[in-house]
Image (cartoon, rainbow, N blue to C red; front, side, top):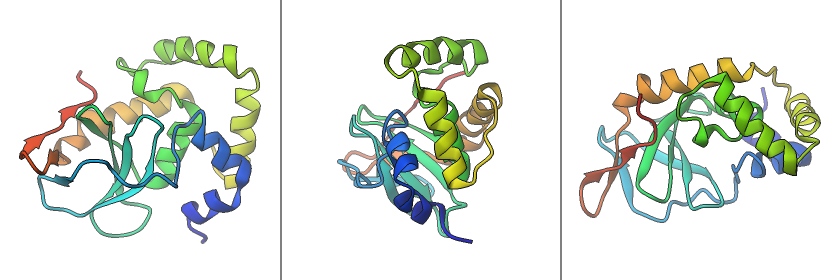
Length: 174
């Protein structure tokens, strides 16, 4: 099976959707600050967003590794277990960072704002998912999984600002 990263690089429309509105750019994998995981597990920057945040693979292995997101303001959270899970989240709810309550209602409100600027969002998302061969969950399901990963599984993935030894703040609190 071809890697999803390779597929993203080959599928221009999918890559464009993930770059915006997904805010996931494979050409921005370097984090501005020196960081490490408290556990000592490896970190590999894979993509970044327009605000200086970085998506990292955690540990050893392939695209099935947990993915941690660190923003440029000192916040971090585990956001997916594996690249396919992350890409599904970005396709279904590219506004995930603003979903502090992880509810479908909150997400629908944010979606309305996005649709004002991008009325073809659903069509673009569906074409990107088809190009990548991904079935998409509903927003509620994707956000429930984000909540589980960020608040329960993510407790074992504490990002440390290396020069000062201070942990990043959790992006989500429940």
